[in-house]
Image 1 (cartoon, helix red, strand yellow):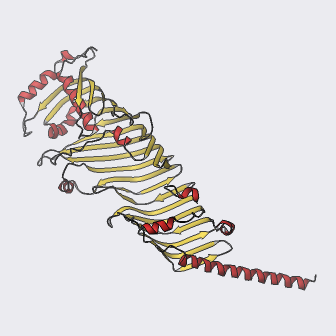
Image 2 (tube, one colour; image 1 turned 90 degrees about the vertical axis):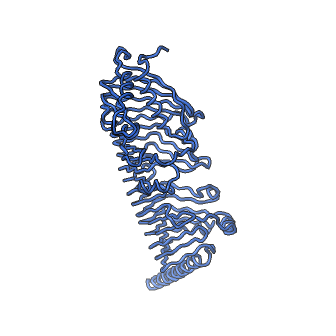
Image 3 (cartoon, one colour; image 1 turned 30 degrees about the horizontal axis):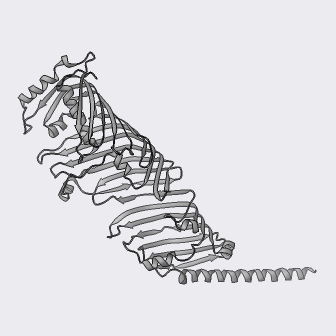
Length: 513
């Protein structure tokens, strides 16, 4: 074959390929436009300013996109939506959609779930065989998300600076019937500022957050009451704590969440809370909240999801508690500083004991420890607690005792140890204490003077060193009936208080068993 003829055949072949390519490109573009304008469900509205396609690369690009779903009040606006790597063979053979990458750039999403969805629309969407869909990589870049309350336009969740990467997303006949109708592989999620409305009184905020299949972190996590102390008291009909919690950083290791037997699951290998500062205020001038308060056994057991955290570490923490008992008396705080704690096997549906080991400084002075264990599956809500207090100069707690108990103390608690075992209704325990120059001062009702008679009677018992054992310890034991409308920590305090009274005013020597 002559050279000119070969060139001519090559040129005609090229022209034919170009014609086929142009025809395919035009058909592809027309088909995509038709699909986006004619074949979407009636409750879906999609608009865009510009469409680009590349049939050879299996690529579709939309610019200035608006997407609305009237059944759920979903409103999405995106700078660009790009689909690439569309596989034609599965699409032509089985009608399956296989995509290499789907990227949504700068989406702004607003979502409000309606109370009642249109049943006919839901039925139409669920009719027919589910399509097989596979997306190798799904990305969101620089997104914003706002979820609204179902009964108002107030914000439930708001996220800024959202970036997402999810791999190997699969939807098919098997997954369509699941509560989460698709499966996925690895994921990476990152947000900047975030907000979550916890209810009518509190909200949650954070500065930034990251999460992937191996670990997660949250910076500057904050929980606050929405109102000032004074405003909160005006809104309440019964007492409710005012909260201010700030945690510098939270670290999550090996998160595992999803569904187990149709029950939501959240498991963690470890959770670390660094430098939590928690301030709690209670206005006792309000009527008591007389509802039953669950002990932690029952509170965990009653969770409607499968929670398991193998280990929780808390470091450099602080808790401050204040109670307003009189309108014209400014409350003093009870403070626990330099808190470090380890919580193991925290679970709601698992087995074994939850254990807590905590250490802190009481009022910035005495070394306080608490060891506490309980089984969430115990129907009687059994628990065991023990603790100690060493080298505590009691003058540091006098401002709190003055405003809360109408008393002051002097002297030093050299060592104090207690053990408590209890359940839902009652508890018992024992205590031993060694102290130096310990003295109670009982104040008059107006707290402006000393009740000399009561002070003298109390200190007669407290100063009788003959009631100490050979190591200088006085011993006491106690029993307590739980007040079911009070918290576990109130229950714990009643045990310690009764132990102190029996130790200092009782027989003093350890009872024979």
